[in-house]
Length: 215
Image 1: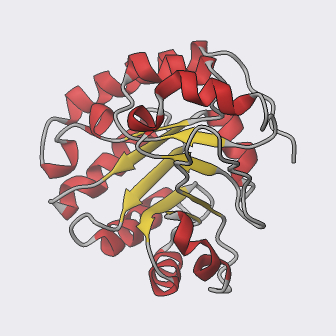
Image 2: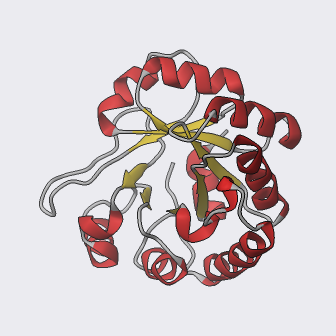
């Protein structure tokens, strides 16, 4: 999959980290039903690989489905075998990711000091700014966009609907949203409430300033 293009098109990555595998699978499918195209299952969740495998069977072979908190090459291979077709890792894990042979696109974490240079390593689709608020928030993202106009930045961490609008309008290609969107759904909570939060966030994303990504 062309992850850069998908991030620029859909602008939202839903991040699932649950304690109840059955509920986590239901959460993935509910988000997909509501129109969330990019969904990431964190490997720190309970039985995360089985959640990815079961969700993949339900979603079919082509729907974007990622693995998050990928720390090692073996994590990457296992996630790919389970059905993940993109992965999110720490910056230090990027080289290992490229050695897996899985051709699974990824993006690493990147929280540089304000004056440091954060160019994407070779073969990386995007850069995750995490934790986004502590890194400097929308103002920091806007400052990065000037000297790095072609980088694909994805703020993650503490991003709710209000912050999502601010980050996207400041130049983020997409935003990653976990608990402010998922809530307790992946632990067995209300799917009705999840649907309501999803519709509200998708409306925000749809109203955000357009973004252009250079390949």
